[in-house]
Length: 131
Image 1: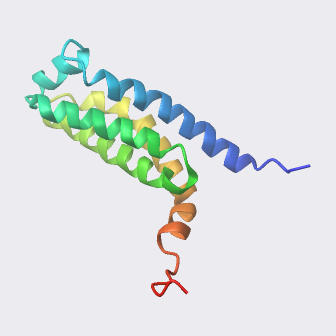
Image 2: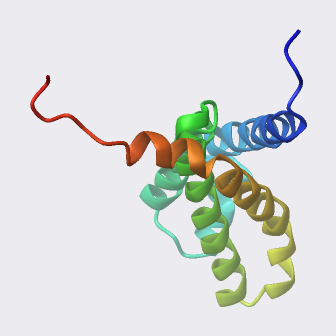
């Protein structure tokens, strides 16, 4: 019988939650009638930037679905959350940064928890000769 690795299970649960949140929120950014469309206008961001953030969020969520790429997706989420925090501070609403604290923290948990899987894949020795 295979032994349950509780740390691995916890990372999968955190990643699953982030996937659920960021697929939904990323897709919502594609709608011109969403609350996100109005928010990005209030923040004086162009439409293309809202769409770009939506693409990044959905892509990051999909990258969380494998051990090998989860740290990349988590890093992307962390960068987006830091940008969102900066937006709130810059636009005079610093108290709203609290909404990004949980996703930022969870993305950092996945980033560091899955880093070894990415590093093992990305930095493995290559055999250029094919032999």
